[in-house]
Image (cartoon, rainbow, N blue to C red; front, side, top):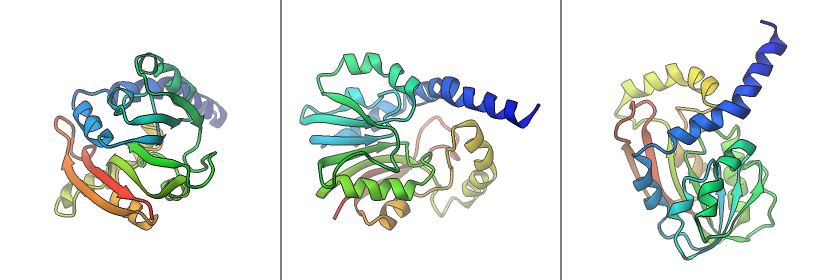
Length: 216
């Protein structure tokens, strides 16, 4: 198969197949309790990066007055239609790239990121952008999967082995990024974080960090 043919097939897969796979995976029965926890306490105007197909929408608190959804996939946005119709929280698709947000400085009261930092090509740039658009003292609510705890070196070895394949099949999804390290490097202060493995999933895929971080 020619290089051009391979690129065409991968492009079709990324645009028309992968969003449906992610929609199913992100709707797994283990995720709603985590989404409810990470969304708790959100209020005011919220920017959500990696909106996906809107699985967080049912868990937005009533104190949220609006959500600016950043989502690159047109199909992902269409798949969110039913969830958007069922919510009273105003949600608008307001950007395509978390690495370059189309907002002024210091405009959002909070930010939300769920299983997103693993996939953004330049996650450090995306976090710097979030800091820029958040008001001073605003919080980023996050749940992210990534590098297993230090004491689980055998899991880390599998993550390093499988990451190239995982990235190819799942749209660039990394297995070895550390959400806490990335947030700290971007200048956020971790307020609270819980590290755990999701039930019912292989450990190399299921090392999660859930918490909040404050923007200076």
